[in-house]
Length: 241
Image (cartoon, rainbow, N blue to C red; front, side, top):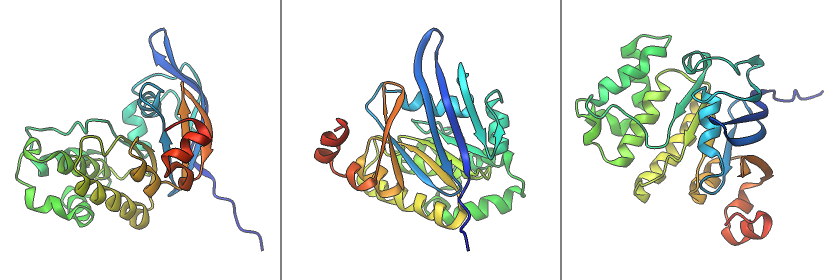
């Protein structure tokens, strides 16, 4: 009896993008299956953030295709992509600092197909640390707690795939471990796929089933997490460390 081959949830083909006349992405091709965690590793300036912003629709693609569950979304707006099931947590988190934690979560519920109270109660089961801070301004939280809030707010919209940009940047190690475990739980319990941009090797290898190397706007190769885990081995293999 044959086993069905998983189809791609997100499929990117020959994607080009940039800023005005400055090209950054030079033909990205990648795929992410339902529930799969894929990491993207690269030095600063290689196009990692540009890739996520283009996938989310904040930057226009100048060539290539982006498909979500088979549907071409290359020309869709960021809002349309979010409604279709793409969630995005940018570098720097971008929570609403003057709003309370509860109000931040309510903003995330604008895309939810369930009631607001039900959605927030469900999300807090995955982010129990936030329960004690519901009435506290988002800007009063630590950097790690703000990252957890950004993740929780994004998940309130019910995405099928999460685009995550440098989630451990500037965060203390104890919270990094909590973020990693929370993301594992999200994948395990909610079946959400993840495309993760990260320079922290322990984070990207601890989460990713596959690691893609991005250099000068192009995916140059794929490496297994055990190679990406070792800086010396990674340097010997792809010149990345």
